[in-house]
Image (cartoon, rainbow, N blue to C red; front, side, top):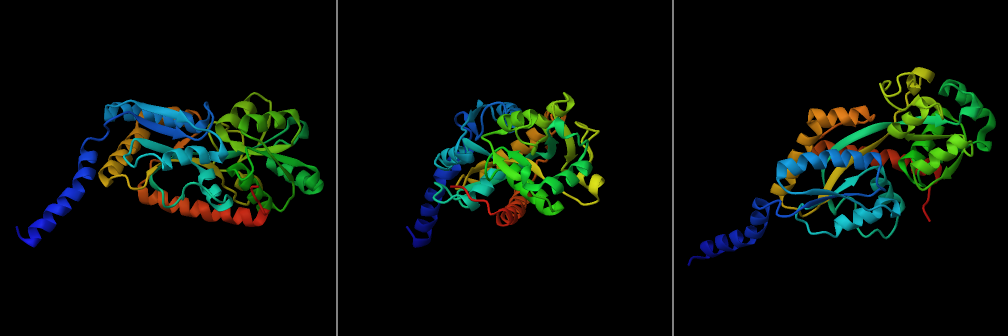
Length: 321
């Protein structure tokens, strides 16, 4: 046997396992790891996608909630799973923020995962305690400037997107308020409604429910245009003439090293699921915008978001003990 023939056979043998794995994918149930407690916005989005994937790939697709550690527990679970495409991770802002604030993570956010698609997003809604009597951010801003650090704002966690977005809000409009971190959106919103803290930037879906019920004031929406979910709440641009846009977003990642053919299958089918009219309608009704980006667009977006959060971290001096 010639040397060229032996080399060709060796290369074919090396490629065989990956090719066989790709051809047989999926060979077992797929899990989508959501790093938050059950019932949140990201889980709702993931379940809509899971239903469509299950039909397309002819295998069960299950949601696995792995909350804790500021999303690091869920990320670690997927980073340590086999690189075969059967474990997906729903990432969000915290995934990028943790990479900048936390030392000794069990994974590398940029090397251990392959981005699939930016799935959906929802703008942040600035809400406040009804006792303030400020119908919009236009009236709230002078009060915040006057009272400064005697007022406080809630977030759904130290280093969360809601925390760093509010720090950017303070920087943009030049006012001061004390930060009070909570372990999640429900606890933070409860204390805003009770007046223990005065305001917070929250995700649109849960915030809109309380604003419509009259339990909180909707001061402004951090979007380019008003949302049909809360049509009476103006944008920061409308109310002040100065643009401020902030949002929570969710994407899908898979372990790096997953065969390219499997990555392509997952990316294609997830995008199809997000573009399904029924899925889009349900997510839009909840105040979420479906995106369904390409892999390249998602990578560029994550780099841009990482830079934006780095600015907020520098400005606020945020640290995680």
